Image (tube, rainbow, N blue to C red; front, side, top):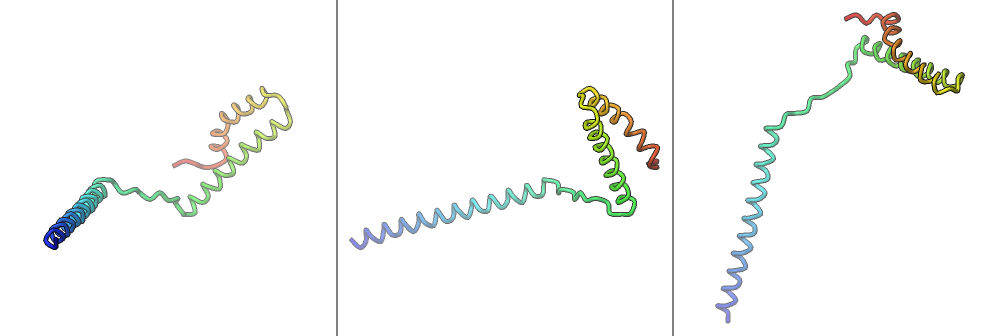
Length: 109
């Protein structure tokens, strides 16, 4: 009887050792795969806003342009309740905003 128990215990320990080895092999394979993927995939570039005086002025100008565009649209919508007038103001604003930008701000590079 004790020989049978010893044999079964040895089988259980061998099975447990195989399971542990299988687990370690799987973990090592995952680690190698992650390392390979990390080497092969390009690193993301950091996208940051420029922080100089010129960039701040450019952002302020762009904000002013957007605010004026929205203000014109709201005024047209409040003054004339026609969809045609609102659509015409939108089309004309889209066409004339680049002209106003060119005239108002010196954007030559």
